[in-house]
Length: 71
Image 1 (cartoon, helix red, strand yellow):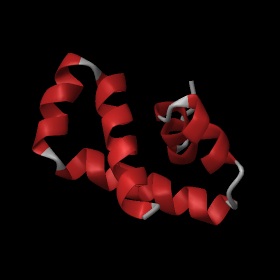
Image 2 (tube, rainbow, N blue to C red):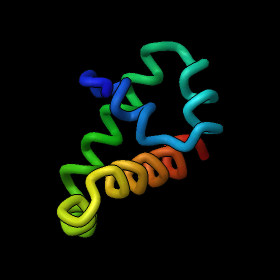
Image 3 (tube, rainbow, N blue to C red):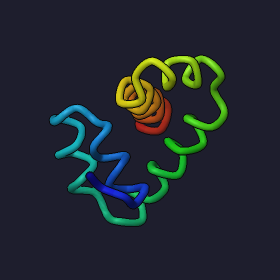
């Protein structure tokens, strides 16, 4: 299991997005991972989901970040 934020972010993505984001420059991956961590910290709904299923909360936060950041 990855321990750095980029690795954890990539692991939270579905395979298609994981490959696409994995091909981006490291700096861009780090920016997306930082946005993902902020999303996880800031959203109260994700806190509740995290109690039930941490992987589901991480995947939902990743989906939201990609939706917002890749427009």
